[in-house]
Image (tube, rainbow, N blue to C red; front, side, top):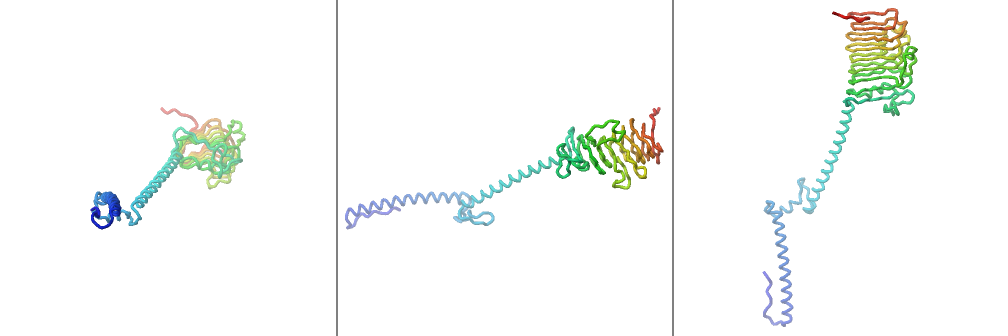
Length: 347
């Protein structure tokens, strides 16, 4: 309702005019205030009525979040929720990145354990310049022990693995256990001639090497076996293979006098293993070739050596021999052992 103008009174006309002008101003102000009130009511309707509420208390309640925390304004509550959402989104992104990194690490482990087919793994060992603590098996940073090199081979892989050993003395009983691989080669980094072998002039010296439960094609090349008296077990074997695939021993020398060690075997094969020995030197050995139950040793040509006690001993295993190695007792069988010295055609 608008204010009424003063029409009749005893005040001068000038004062009336001024007073009425003021009334007009007040009416205009009142009109603007009423307009703002209408706008405010519409905003309240939007907050309360259109959202399903029926009380102005809904506006106050909008400042309270689901945890019962009260904010000064609805805007501050909304900003807090948005900031929390941003923090949670950032945390989720970090978790995704961490999961991505972990997945990458897992893939690296899988790649290491199940190495891709057709690849080659080359590991270097050096007694003079290698280190098991700071080396990584590369030619530039080799390991110092052969066992460390063996320990780094992936247990399950389809790679061709070669361990190159530089000149030196490695008084180790090296153990390869449970490796499934296409091929494993332990060899001198240098090529050796037959003359080097027969004169036992080989640059790499190792105490013993054993392969157990390794499904692989295995090769030992250019190794001189020494320090036989210091084996870690009561049964001495320079080269031992058990429950494996195929082992080839070539260009190696076994000439340390071990005839006083009753349990010593130079090349020992057992289980379902097969071994092939060629162009090696065997002198002053107790038992040169020993084939235990169900295993087989093929003694190829160009082997030399003398002054051995027993050359071939087959204990329920098989030895196929064409050897130039001699001894006091050439052939000995135990149980159902079989030694074949000549090829036979059965018809």
